[in-house]
Image (cartoon, rainbow, N blue to C red; front, side, top):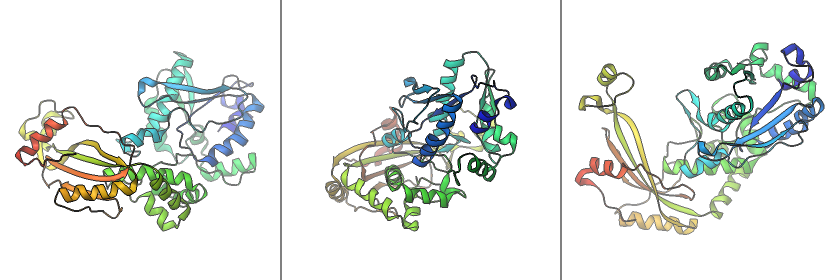
Length: 394
């Protein structure tokens, strides 16, 4: 898209000198190195030749109040930033979670890219309308349909590649003719939750073999998340670790094991409250939102909202934390168990088949997850547990 606009600007409604074209990229800190290298070598050279303005931005911190930072703003770009002061992994490490596709939205893309670029554009253009060209290819109409929901009186979305009917083979051929690069790898975050669930799985695993240290860092994120919730794998149908084992990627797995051995570990005390979901009667009578629920508004056979509490009970090296967990299990009159993931846990309380339900466990995993729970968590826990609360002195 950039090449086409630069080589024939007036055909696309741009000034001949490209003074009204601005390329903006928001760095997530998780892009594959080969994507950045190729863009740096070939695309930046093109932008310098035509003196096109390139603005590189990034989220400045975890909270929205932190805003964004401009990493570079020039018509002579010579490098692409690898990350800014905040990266997506900085969000998932302290929460012990992974990227999610929720309510039809890529939450990670909105936080790390979309909202950052929108805020920069608002500061840059104010009330002046502008076209926002995005490089969705011809087969990504569903993504353009989601993006167009964010159109506004100032932001006018434009999807040139869809308009031109350019799919990936057509794009690869065009880039080969322009730069002599036979295959331009797809741009996405290394910790993206989609590549291994689609046709790109083989290419994704090839990248993991090429960059084993990158894959190892993602494995570490997945490990923390699965320790707190065994069902939280990176991909919908499998974990990254399972894929790398099947692929025989010993380099990534060895790098991952070295990281586990070298870093501090923790015992986490994890509790969950599974509330009863809304009944069909409630939805019919109260619509999308029920502000004053009655007993009939809850279905004890339907799982609703889940609250989670995480507390760190011990810190130390890996070879000390595992025995400590076994001792805690002994004090609870049980033993450590591990699911197929091999992560040692002490299951203190298992949720039942009706709701509300409670779950409680201890687990040994890499340190880094911050303790957190809602203000009313303890009250609701005790309220549901009643006299059957299991004491646990941590």
